[in-house]
Length: 204
Image (cartoon, rainbow, N blue to C red):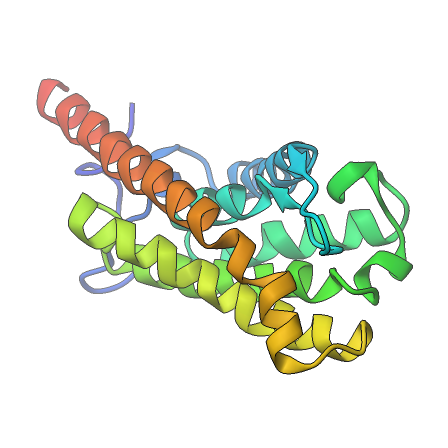
């Protein structure tokens, strides 16, 4: 079984992400990218409506940070791109089993688009080993979610014709606590997974 220590490096001093521990290359990557899209679609159905806001609280951002950190920048980005595409062409992948380009270009579409750069940046940080300790992983995942809001809130303001303050009240403020909770979950899960990998490597 290939482990973190036995995997060949593709370049000088290349830091692994969790997905690199799995043997195989092309088939592995295709399965992992598809899995990232499906995980995001599944957690999108965990949705809590927010009074006065078209944006619900969902599990999507948890899926984004987990899969991005585990897969790295390219595969993490590809997973979210596939999620966006499959939902746009009609699969019920968005929140509330929604789908279609009208969702992507609607009031909440900016958050979905924001998943792509967030996944890439989180994956890039994970490639540098920033997901292996709780003290680094937790702020990483909190900041990664801010990337999503940085695109989603202005998008909401434009599409829904809201003022900046109204868009922040509807599209950011209600999600602060949930975002911190999701950052904490991922901030424990990823370092925990790396602990298991290191232990298995020593035993192997």
